[in-house]
Length: 166
Image (cartoon, helix red, strand yellow):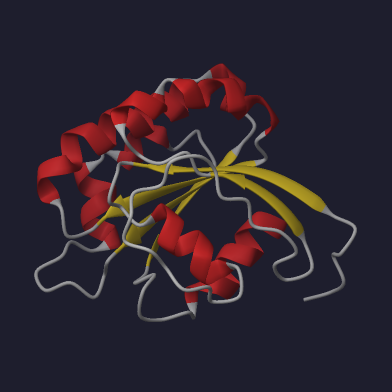
């Protein structure tokens, strides 16, 4: 990648609690060790791949989800993290993702749906997510999907950086 040190990208990292948002951000920021404690507050990633990223991760608990709308207005992109091993949460994942897709404040934002925990036995695939979340209904939106294991591999780091920079 070229020198992007002067660029600044604002993004929202969201998803349900336990999906792996903070783990993903910690690993993105120089492979930082990860805590199993739920996130309370925010976790900014800066200067990853030469770009100043201002990501907001408030945690996925329901009490934080409505608050996030106040932070959306400056988002160039949204990274929505979904747990591929948790089929029980799919109705809530679909509801929350649809809220984001339908919000006029995010109409120009691009979306990366990250299917995390791809290393778990019996987990869904990215294709499963597209189907179960009816993502084909949002063909008018700019979205991509990606599978990863935030705790095990890091080949996804480059893909996320390219998504943010595009």
